[in-house]
Image (cartoon, rainbow, N blue to C red):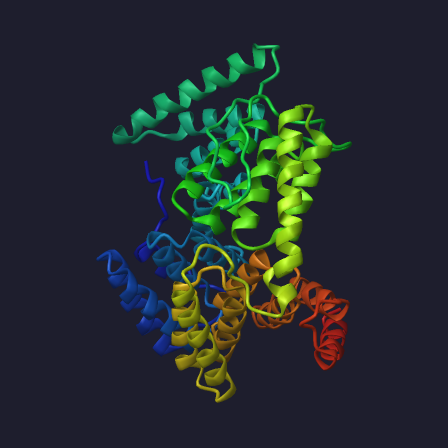
Length: 451
C-alpha cells in the first residue's frame, strides 16, 4: 500500500490555477527527474527555479514539499502541501500529501481534513481511506475510523496489499472492543524527560489535573505527544520537543505532565516567563503535593533567571537562542544573520538567503533569522517558503510582530486573502516592541483593501 508521500510524473498531469511558463515547466521536469532518483537537493533547487518562474504553481509547490519531506523537513513540507491545495483546490495529489505529512507530524485533525478532501476527489483510491481511518483513530473518533477502515477493506483489491487489509480488520475489531468497554481510559506514566539545567522534573503517574470547563480531551493523542516530546528532549532537539509538548497540552488541557514538561522545554530555550506560566498552571491543577512543590520550586528558580536575564530573549532586546548552543557557535550564527540582513538591504536576496540559512543551521532557535529569511524569500518571489519561515518565527517567538507583517505580504501574494487580512490586522493592533508605526499604518490599509 502506498503510504508515503506520492511523487513522480502524476504531479505533472495536474496543473494548478497558475499557468506555468516554459522555463517553469522545464525546471519542474528537472525536479521530477531528480526526485525520482532521490537527488533531493537537486530536486528542491529545480522546483524552486520553477516557482521563481511561475510563483504559486501547485505542482511545483507539491514537488518542493515532497523533496523537503524526504529530507526530514516535515514542517516546511506540510506548509508547502497546504499552499499547493490552496493554489489549486482540485489538485488531489497535494491533498493526499498534506494528509500524510500532517498525520506523520501528529496533526491528526489536519490530516483528517486533507484525507476527507482527497477521498472526495478520488473515491476509488483505497489508500486515502486508510489514511483517513488512521487519522480518525488517532483523534479518538472510533465510529468514523471504523467506517473508513471498512471502506478501505471493501476497495483494496491489490494482491500485494492484503496485509494492510488484515491490519485494517484488526483495527476495526480493536475499536469495536474498546467501544464495548465501559471503562474510561486512564493516563499512563512516561519516563521523565530531560529538564532544563537547574530545574526539576518529577515522576508522573496518573497526574492529569481537573479539566478546564468546556474542554474536550483527547487523552491518547496527548499521551502520545508527551512521549514524542520525551524522546526529542533526550536527543537534545529542544525546539521540536516544545512543539510536541504544546500539542499534548492542546489535546488535553488538563495533562499536568505535558504542562510541566512544556515548561522545562521552554526554559531550556530561555523563555522563562512562558515556562513560569505553565508551572503555575501545574500548581493549580495537580492534586499531587510533590508535583506541586516541584512546579513551585521551578517557578522560584525561573524568577531568579528573569531578574538576571529577562523573561525571554526578546525582553533583553537580543535575538532568541538561549538554549544549549555553544557561545562560539552562537556568535558565528549572529554574524551570519547580520550579514544576511545587510544583503537584504542591498537587495542581494540570493546572497541573503545563503547567509540566513547558515545562521539557522548554526542556531535553530534564532527566530529573527527565520523572519529575515522570509524577507529574502519575498524578494525572490518564493512566497510559499516565505510564509513557512514567518510561521516558524512566530512559533519560536509568539511575542514578535515582524513575522505578522511578513505573513500578510506572503499570503497576499499567494492569493490567500483572508489569512493575509488577518495577519495585517494582528500587526496593526500589536503592541510588541518590534512593531513599526509606519508599517502599522500600511498594514491597516492593506487589510482594508482585502475586505
